[in-house]
Length: 632
Image 1 (tube, one colour):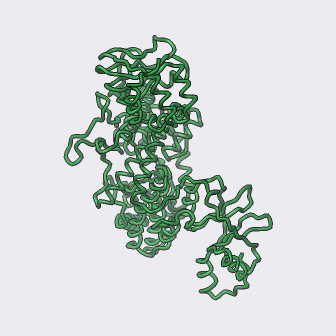
Image 2 (spheres, rainbow, N blue to C red; image 1 turned 90 degrees about the horizontal axis):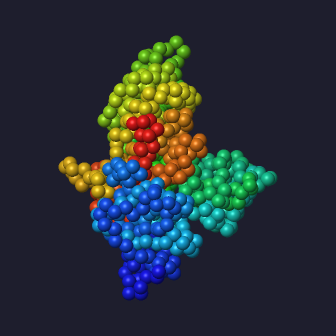
Image 3 (cartoon, helix red, strand yellow; image 1 turned 60 degrees about the horizontal axis):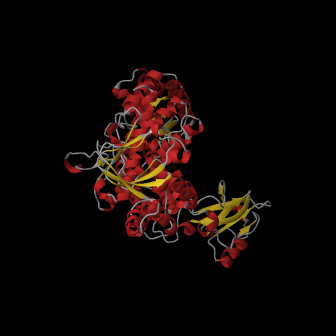
């Protein structure tokens, strides 16, 4: 039955206020609006239930509240399944042509729009936007929010090139290259004629083996007064990694940051097809990735590094405006923070002298997971191998003064000292391989609250400076140890359930009520932590070596430990909460405030509030899986 014309406009106005309907083509929106029927459901009335057979209608909540219940009548804990205006159900059952698994009941007198199953299927086939929403519900909403977020960020940041652009779109039309024996003079002539600042060096198979930039010419030819008849192979920068035209601009940006070289060679099936420069990626940027990375790696003192950390905040703002995902942003921040730390270690060793024994600087916590934001403190340690004839205690005594100097320098640059003293200058965090194994074994075998807390920080470790082999040996040993101890994992699961997502009894947010952060939610403790803890537990159970939370979820999905749909939903939910957190930090930094993790949901627009609720629901779903699996 078609919607009367007099009511059609009000239905359209309602739909245009809610995602995904606000992005649908006008003809598809009208198709939907004309077929919706408005129905009243009284308080406690069941709208859908498992006993009704195959789902026959699609519902959109117009007014009121609807709660999901398990078949035995128990509501989802803390209202995690409660729906609000604009949300729809039961999409999964309609797509699968099955009965619903969840009973939907009106919490109060409510109005819902109903759409018959055949009309739902027609709309699904007609509208790409609606189809995308139904098959990628959370991801689809995130796409919409990300577009709005990028637009807001771009308002204050110069630069409009998207980091999600394929590199083929950035390749210059005037590709230039030369052979290794080409004289420098001829290479410079090509650069001048093509008005390019760089040239690729290729072998007889047209594989890129090096490049020369005007900067190279200045430092390696002009200043040393090298004869310009010298073959370019003697002054070129060697190329070890290339990207393909189908790779994205972000991958080129990250490679520039890691290498400190402002150019990337693009190859297709091994054949050189063009150079992409930092200028191509960020022609309007005020801070360049390659320049910043190079400046960090060549900094001579701590004050210089401190200033470069300020530049990193500007870079993050630019990347947000250019469409970088939260995973891209945190990887980049962690990569640049790695460079800062590595440079500080070298500067401090120049002051104290290099220790006689090999040592590895370890990062723990968020840095160990490559998940750092602008707000981060120190979580680090040392794994050393005593010199021949040297005891562990003698080696530690030699390393601790250097460690203390490094920790203080990191603090001066902008990485605050760890309140829990998880730092290399602490003798308990400066250990040999066997000592680290003994310490970890104690935590696994005696899972006290303190030991469990320490394991959530220390077990996310990676090499930041020094030899990696003993670190990987420690990781292999730890994975075997934890996979074989079900009691420890059960206690770790109990620990995972302590930080509940802040969803209240009535489907709204459960807000803090203390002091400065009244009416806020803690995005880190109650939003990010459930995903981090859950992914860590799953990776330990299945002996997955990854430390990054998203990599852990992906690895678990590939290993069959998680369903692909669950892993994708949790990755999207984690990413969105982390992005809100980073956006919050960015604004605090711009205002000169001390950065914190609290956010007032009332400050969000309706779409962000809706997605944040769904993200918290996904965190609850992950916790429910762990609760059932470990019978908690």
